[in-house]
Length: 97
Image 1 (tube, rainbow, N blue to C red):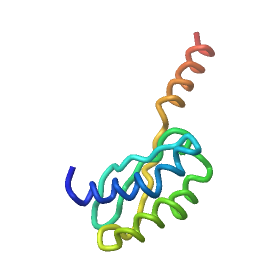
Image 2 (image 1 turned 90 degrees about the horizontal axis):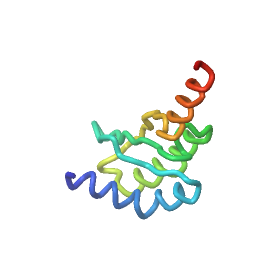
Image 3 (image 1 turned 90 degrees about the vertical axis):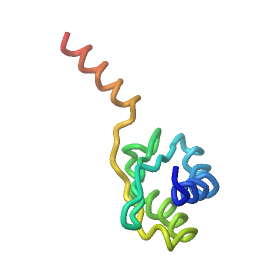
């Protein structure tokens, strides 16, 4: 992991992850490109109706404030959690067999 991503991870560990984990969520860096940090919200945060608000008021606010020379924007890559994917497959199997 390069030094820039290590610095971002440190901010996430200190300022962001505790709040997300309190709600059963997690965050993972996907990549950093042109001062845009691309992240995945995981756990209960994945697909949550408040995910955009969480990104703006927590993730982006903290990371941009701490590292303005590195990050100007945070973009969430939409993902489906493994748990939700498995639940969907079970439902399909149960109803189509």
